[in-house]
Image 1 (cartoon, one colour):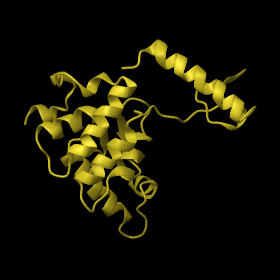
Image 2 (cartoon, rainbow, N blue to C red):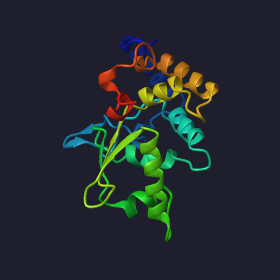
Image 3 (cartoon, helix red, strand yellow):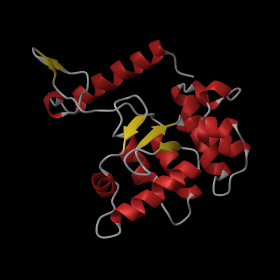
Length: 189
């Protein structure tokens, strides 16, 4: 596992190498921590697990022929780092998820239901049946599916996720599943 000190050392080495390969490019890169005299230069970002590509792959494998990754990523990018999403603009959410046209909202709603059925999110009604969503820790949800042998979750993809998570020091991929961190819908099962 990588400690914070090791991660900082790795980051400094990567920055030094980047500067050697692409000198003076900092002004052209997205840096959420870059500051100016009046505040942060870049805003509108979200924090995301480095394992997200594998999480998205696993979701798509578990939802055979009905990919969930674009819908989930749209939800993730709609939070303010609080795992909570207001779903008051379904047309915009559907479009950002890649679903347009007459059936766009319907397709998006079906993907939302599937994400809910797979326990990646919980949905509460608002002005309509899809009013609000909370996004559960995807590492814990995938681990729960692995323990329950959910169809579509391949051993190869799960093992790749565990390896990647361990390499970056994600401690939520090992040990006991903490009951307080699991979705209430998973605890009931």
